[in-house]
Length: 209
Image (cartoon, rainbow, N blue to C red):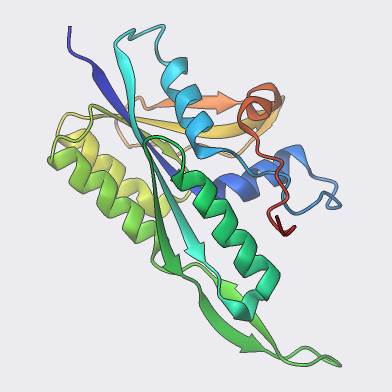
């Protein structure tokens, strides 16, 4: 029986912030807490489906993230470089970055400061999901994100016969709602704190090596 190729698509900032909201909700957690190792996350999501499909094989992990520059501060910019370099050393992990979009804001009594936001990262991820499906690069796409802007890409992948799965963090009685494809029973992997602990990365990339 041929392998069922699984590709995991990770909206990194979405995954990180959702983990912090659920598992480190005190607001006092160190900034690196909530980070995950994308390769171990991919292995976990592939393995969780093997009971129903033993032929599942992890064919790749694709990570999408906005890239800060010096306007975010030199320490944050350098920590980003160190973290991404570490990801790229992992087998099968591909990292896609896009420069953050900055604008200046003035706050009463303070100097103007730069505020950053991701722009175009979701489009980059959506294109990869759709093109990968139509190029037959996978049988299963597992999408780690709660961003509803990705729904058209998930619907497109499903329309050409690909299995689409999603994943969200969860705690008893509390979770971020998973993405749902209208008219389809989409399989969502709820990952609780015990599963988060299997893939967490507590490395302080802000600290110089």
